[in-house]
Amino acid sequence: MKLIDKNILVVGLARTGVATARFLAGRGARVTVTDQRTEPQLQEQLDQLAGLPIRYVLGRHDAADFAASDLVVVSPGVPQESPYLAAARGAGRPVITEIELASRFITAPLVVITGTNGKTTTTTLTGEIFAACGFATVVGGNIGTPLIELVAADEPIERVVVEISSFQLEWIDTFRPTVAVLLNITEDHLDRYPGMTEYIAAKGRIFENQTSDDFAVLNLDDPLARAFADRVKAKVVPMSQQQELVEGIFHRDGVIVWRWQGREERFPVAGYHLKGVHNIENIMAALAATLLLGCDAADAQAAVTAFRGLPHRMELVRTVNGVPWYEDSKATNVGSVQKALASFDNITLIAGGKDKGGSYAPLAELVRERVRHLVLIGEAKERIARELGHLSDTRLTGSLEEAVTLAAALTGPGGVVLFSPACSSFDMFKDYAERAERFKALVRALPEERG
Image 1 (cartoon, rainbow, N blue to C red):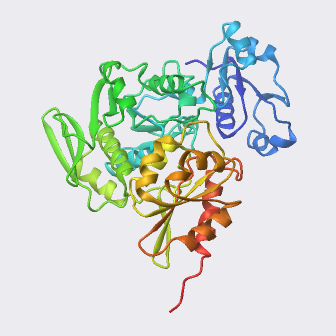
Image 2 (image 1 turned 90 degrees about the vertical axis):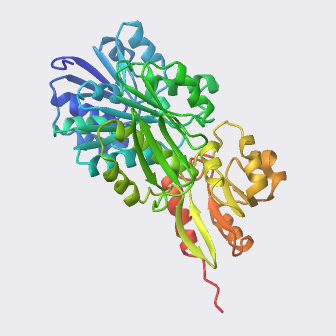
Image 3 (image 1 turned 180 degrees about the vertical axis):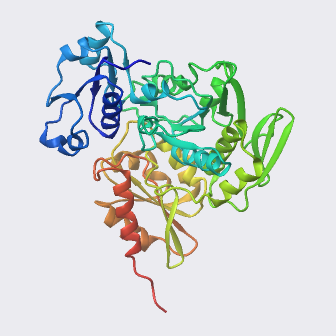
């Protein structure tokens, strides 16, 4: 892809926009950056681009810039229906995201992971396995490091692992994974999409440009993921916890089994730090992706065994007075909470936050069977109480502090406290990480009983 002297418009100056603008300017493009925030609001980002030949249009967008550019690189947070993007398309200008741009400069095999839940854990673990098996590996995308930063580093790369969201997949054009992994699809982002049909279609775009030379790892236990098996051009690599497979990867009696093209490898799970049924899925997906691309089974098993997981995902904060407290702030949708609840019994569940538009009904059976106390917070607490409150002892609280204090009073030895919100954090916190740190600080401050 030739960039020299091309007029390229970068829309949005968050971390990805900064990395994109720097990359394009370094490759000789004529770069314009536009953001509706003002110069004082963007000072930190502008300082990172100081000295580069970049034109800025700040505090507004100008439709003429969109129509005059050879290429528009946009933040995936911008709606497809934006009138400015319509102006670009109306003028015949291609509109892509940073991840599509970066992929055009990558020659190494590309493992791309999507799904409503488990993406970040699976992506991180996949990168750890490749590295342990001796491959020069980079990990990026929606996981936090823009892929374009990794491309710009110009270092030798043998494997690339990418977490990708439905928002990013909306914008792809030629983006083609060597291995595409679809973990699951459950209700999420219905504040962005008109309905589940559109959300499923966005997730499915991960397979759009694959050929019969590529691989599609599909979770057969998830009906919406399984439905893609007959639609993809790539070789389907099935995975399941519910059935033994003639070919693919499955879990049975404490052992993950990999069967592919006459080869069988066995991975006992007893020594893994990652716990819970959802993490078995994540591990199977990471093993499948890495074994397909040359990893040694023994080295892969060692990497999985050493992996301790990520913050804010089913993290044991502390055991207080015989009660373990788990922080799962990353569980911002119902599907993620389902997996968390399936891992415990006798639960005091702290949930709630900013509602994302989906139904809480899929949690009903698990709440009835496993949740002894339901402690609710945030904007969504009344709605959750209407849908689930009759299934458990349910209390509404005014803050996370109040919720933690109440959960401590309600839960005795033999119980477990789980903070798994099923909602986003933006009603009360900057993001899920800030919410997690607040919860952990509160739990660490709880007193131990003496005597």
